Amino acid sequence: MDPDIPAVVIRAALAEKGVVFGLASDDRIERFIRSPIADSTFFIVAQGVPPSPGKDSKIEFFFNTDYLKTGGMDDFGNIDFKRRRPRPLVEKGTVLAEKIAGSTPQPGKDVYGNTIKAIAGMDDLCHVGGGAVLSEDGQKVLATVRGTPMITLAGSIVVHEESVVKGDIDNETEPVEFDGNIRVCGSIKSGARVCGVDISALEVDNGTVEANGDLTVTRGINAARVYARGNVYANYITNSEIVCMGDVFVKKEIVDSTIECSGACSIITGMLVSSRVFAKMGLMARSIGSGGTAGPSRIRVGHDAFAARELEKNSAGTMQVEEAIHNLGKKKNTILRQAAGIKKQMTELERVKERLLVKCRKIESRRARSPGDRESLHSHLTGLKKNLKAAETKMQMCAAQIKDLVKQAAKVDRQFSGPAASQKGLADEKKNLLRWSEHTPGKARVVVDGEIVSGTVFVGLHSRFVPDTELCHVRITERPVKCEDQEQSEVIYQMQVDTL
Image 1 (tube, rainbow, N blue to C red):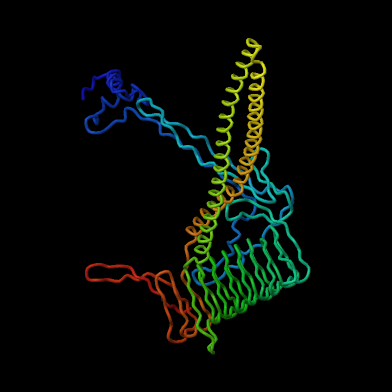
Image 2 (image 1 turned 90 degrees about the vertical axis):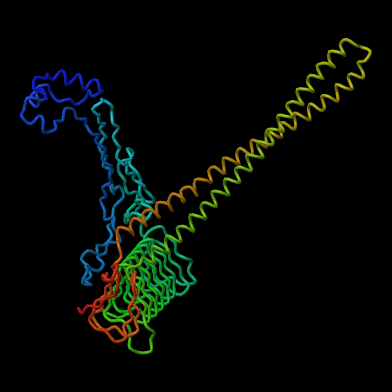
């Protein structure tokens, strides 16, 4: 490289190639050219500016949003009850959440002087449901009632009020349905149905409970069907079906029951007897089996039976909503076709009317010119006017029909809003459920401090184990085991037993 080349020559050569932006200074260019390393290294003579993407906006919540985070089970089978906090109670007007704006994207520029667009950040929106409202600027969520705030599975912020039922609920009582928390001072008895968010009662005996939050039972659950999108707390569970998104905490025992939960199933001081348990985050019990005539328990851990059930239900609901939208579309199309047919009829009537008017004008002109034919022309004119009036009457009827059809079409348009909102809600629920499931991988393990009777069936995600002898003080965990083969090695899984 000629050390005497001036920087202006370099600049001119770059300009010929279209490089005009981000050039190094003349002084730096000439210092490099005259340096002893000019022939052996590179020098950045022009450099563009990369675009700076905008930062995503985010929502800051002022209450505990993870209502399913109750502690669960650690790797050693311990339950962290300290992490179980009561739901907060907020007053009307409390700020529940606030949107934090993201940054504005800054465009970049390449060495040819071309602008490089920057990617804008995601704009996270606040969605509100019952008991909550957006502020006028849309940046804050405020409580409109006194109650318990939470986020629904569809991602909406809601505040639930509390309804208190004094005494028992039985088959002679009307089903209790409340879009909020329900506190039953007595028991939920045979034939009774209770639907709410967080539900609490002394006892559930042969009743049905559907909770969009937690179910807390002071005594026990017997011969009942329970569905909860939160956790289930009880002293004991017998002959019941429990399906929940959170954890199942039982103090004494679970007998002759089916448990499906996305969290952990914990029998704190008692035993599991002749039951089927599907617990994504594992099972902890004092003992499994009674040693008597009761049948063996079947335990599946690591698999999310609740999510699978919910996704199936979501798909069925989505199909129903889509069918409703399709039927509304067909109904509106039928109305539009009817309106189009009547408009076509009106167009024909308009043509008939024009022809009749032309004939009337001609007869009027002839009658003025031919007084002798006035009587026959008058008779003809009377007939034409009669036909003209009939055509106008039909046109008025058609106009009234079109007006009615327009009202019907507008009514159908309003009916679309309900299914459309349901469709979006179901789509959001599915997305959030899948994301929640992916972010909380299952734990295929069982921890038993006491005895496990032989014949108990343990199933993980990839393997199963049935002990042929009694076990005591063990932890059963599904773990990968590398199997060496002559030509290839593959990972297989086994339910392995460790002594506590």
